[in-house]
Image 1 (cartoon, rainbow, N blue to C red):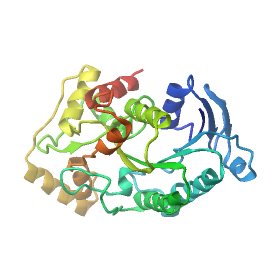
Image 2: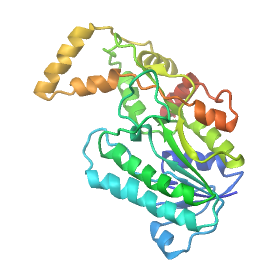
Image 3: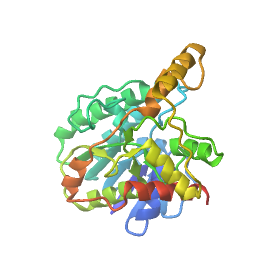
Image 4: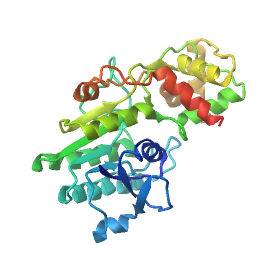
Length: 311
């Protein structure tokens, strides 16, 4: 197939190219256009407007403003990138010969935190903050148009994606562990879902090959991990002994409350983020693709990612 991938030079785009370049002819659309092995040519967003992009069979829309965990980004930047660029590329898709469109949204477009056992696609979205709000606005635009065509459109809501080249939150935790700093929140046994980039690419390959109904699909590994399990896996990959301290919950909450008053790094909101459950239900996409089990286990994916940090 001929594929057009926006945001092709990012972490996910680079991994997709590395995996699919021998099977498909790949074109890029990005704000930068360096040569990239496996990519015929990368176009700019100006080329989208002037009609010079090549005809393709499918468009994978990755380009977006990532979630800024430090809350330093201006709100309008999220909407200009995550919402407006999505509207532009989807309008282009509707007029193009392409038959499949994959939009990478986020679980944060559905919910900032999960009520109940797990997050599924039937939830009424209630995003908090400009990142999730800009993603849901993009989703709403796509959904308002997808019934006007017989083309196939997919909204992916992945939870945290990791793999070789990842520069996200796992890197921060890796740095803490590498320096021998103990994890003090061992008394909180929370569960979180992750997405191995290998599993994500497996899903994309199957989606390109099969007839799958237009819709919203959560993306995540089969099994959630507790933060304690995550730290143990990371330590094992680094050849270190886990240092997990089970300090009393009451004491930790008191420290976090004090941190909120004094504007310290550990505050009530950060404690909630570090210890909450966020489990994503991935059954819908697996049923649609005829998958019983994803090829990479949650544990294997984490270990591969951590080992790549030291390469």
